[in-house]
Image (cartoon, rainbow, N blue to C red; front, top):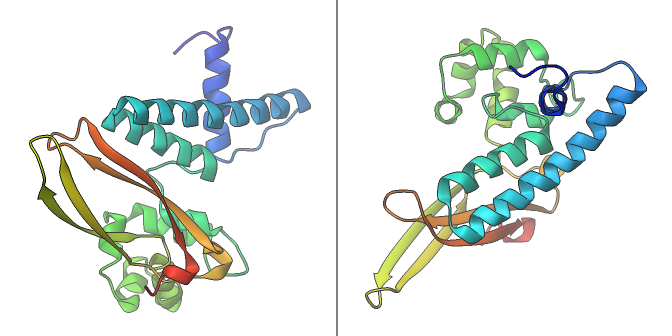
Length: 206
């Protein structure tokens, strides 16, 4: 909405172009995009850490979402399967398959409950249903179970059980995966506790 002469407009457009994986012509634009991408990651990370310290739940969630969009060059409304790479020799993902998945009136969580045959039918490509079903279950996902015990009027004890709910693949997941675990109040406005959790491959069966 701003004028093209406003610096914020250029930053906004270049950052959106970067997340959308658009290619630009000209050394100057490419140089500016690289600088904005690096700066945006640092700034959003700083805002995320500030919101954690201030215990702002919603702000922290939004900042973390933007951080992930910049890091993975992917909008939050797009399918998580894009993270595996399109036209990657390690899988059978193509732009056609991704577009069909994203056009379905299904949330990604609902895909987790479908069989490989149902996935193939849904995207009208039965031949790749098994491969896409396998990738769906390789998207990192955890199941959390908590036991809460009040100790005093202002202190509670929380015992958290973390269970892995995805298939580990060394090519995609490496040796570890990182997660943020947060405990919110009943209104979802204040962070009561947060912790950075690293899941190592050697711990997935424990």
